[in-house]
Image (cartoon, rainbow, N blue to C red; front, top):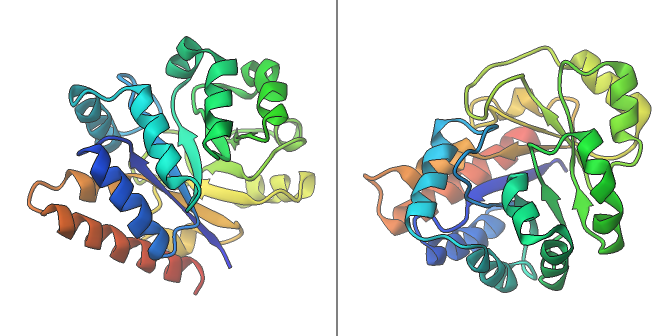
Length: 246
């Protein structure tokens, strides 16, 4: 069965909501949760996730909130931390990876840490049984793909198009998927632009999908109550899980 990874922004609209949403998404069939770490300049993310990031920061988000929340949920649902390198580097890679391991986090997704720049940190993550997820883009050559995925852990993050999350672009990924499959047996998940309408098509040839903006759009909807947001997010998760496995 193909997997569903769901991204939510930690601390928006508040930490209680993040915890409740995490558990609700698990019940709805989400396999892995990406806890987004709010940052003021989320360069890979579109306006939806950027808005949630900024609102969480305005609400006073601190890394300690991420630690406390992770302590509560990571034993119940496979959890990754998705964030930009600056906050992790500022806290200290040794310290933040220790804190992640102590709370049962399974890995990190750091979109602004290119493969070559990540190499010095790989052993630190590996020693603590933490995956540092590798990215492959549609523009990567077969040679680069083979190098990037040679030691990939947990899954490979295939970026569906060159751009930002939620922009709804599309590219022919047949070649890049074939190149990845030739180079590794590690699971391949696709992200960027995955929603209820695109999930079935995007999931062709891969092992899972990563969905962010579609969930965060519900979180940002001012017309919905706390409970309605949770219900809508569960409905979306069930729909996408069904679509990718149909």
